[in-house]
Image 1 (cartoon, helix red, strand yellow):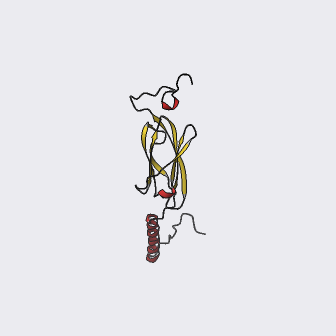
Image 2: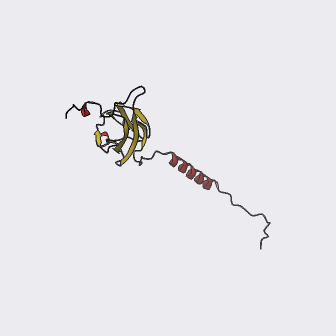
Image 3: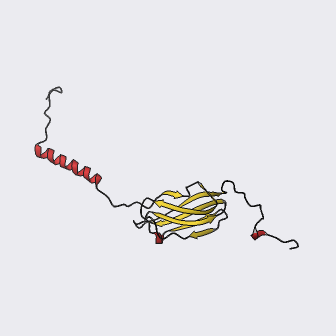
Length: 156
């Protein structure tokens, strides 16, 4: 029996074994740096209007930016109003490959942009951007019932 306090021989790797281990570690390190094809879906990374933000009433430029290229022809933006009406917005044909752009003229109220994109990885993703349209500073709201659509004449 060998006493427990006796020195033990620890095998030392031979030069070829150490070289193979070093090469294996280097290969693993390089594999971590190698580019991999993107398999992620298109994720919204920025928007104008911003999520939960507000914009002034009137013409509104809409921009949705994603983390990857999107197919404009197969992507869509729908504007949802607080009264549950919906309008599909025309997506601009030109622009950066990771963005969708559209425009709308909006009155004060709550809105949601419902988007659907086809990413270049072949996957469809969807989401919503809720925002509020407010009166510009210094503007006054029209009186309730005023305006050409609700004008009434006496006797009718």
